[in-house]
Image 1 (tube, rainbow, N blue to C red):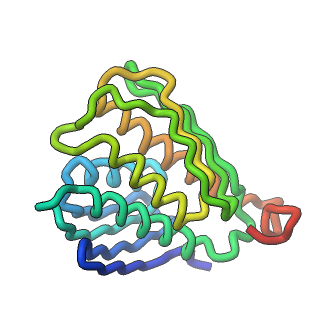
Image 2: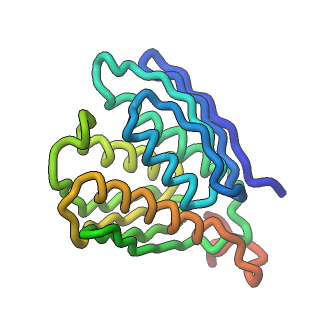
Length: 195
């Protein structure tokens, strides 16, 4: 069965179209209007081996807040729809990713219960012109719509670009684990019978 989804979200603030294939090869076409986020989503697709297309237009004349938050909502929704009832998946994923002086820990559970524990203080308030606080907003929205319990911990880091690159690569690798098929799991990986 194909694990794909296509999501469109249009509001007065943003217009986003996204497609996701969980069993892809890392191909992507990303255009969000926020250059650094394009780079992060390209890394995410490549390291998770997800095929991902994103076309987003937002009210960037105001700032990037609405675009970043709505990208999180749409990506989380895409994961929820692509996973369906979650039968046969591993459910949990974790990855500790080094990048030069930076070390980020990611741990997650596709539990259906959204929670973000974000233990990451960025070394600077901006990366380029983008407010680094908006990554928390993106991840919070992603967890809410994706039903994901996500822990992010910055263990070491001094260069802001490296910090967020390590975060997105680690998130992708942890999600790749969690969504992968467990050949010994024939139902939903929960004693409740539902996630």
